[in-house]
Length: 200
Image (cartoon, helix red, strand yellow):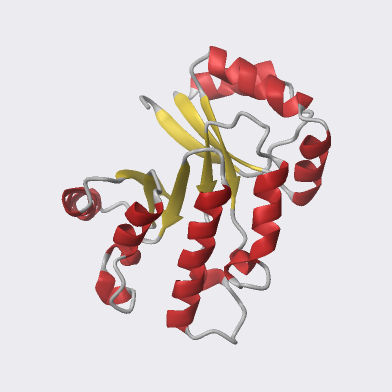
């Protein structure tokens, strides 16, 4: 999409939609990744009207709204079902996509080795893709573009096999030369995927 995209972490369901969308337009934002907490998920699963109003008005203004979910605990097989339940409960809502921002390095559980953690993370994403009714994108650290840092596993190759639409690479620097070279290399190696740049 033309324009910027933005992660939205602290959205309030009772926020005046018109004012919120006007602010997005002002800053050239054409796409938002909307994070919802557990209470909000419960609320819209029971009554989707507030989120439906946001989606309807956003779409009229050419703004895409994707559901943003991210809890490193879902990497664990014992916790994976919680993500599946959320996806099932919200499947009737017309989001433009699902974006998973699940970071293996944030998982505090020490029962998994780093390699097993990575394998479990990929399985969580695979299952989420199979359950979700929307196109799925994933945020990753740039090191996961290199199999050398992923125990020999080609992460983008796995994503392509799962049917993931987009890989958003989260950079923590402003070295545009390096960032551009990294993304161009990834795009050339994995033409089936859409690559986006996110900066933190």
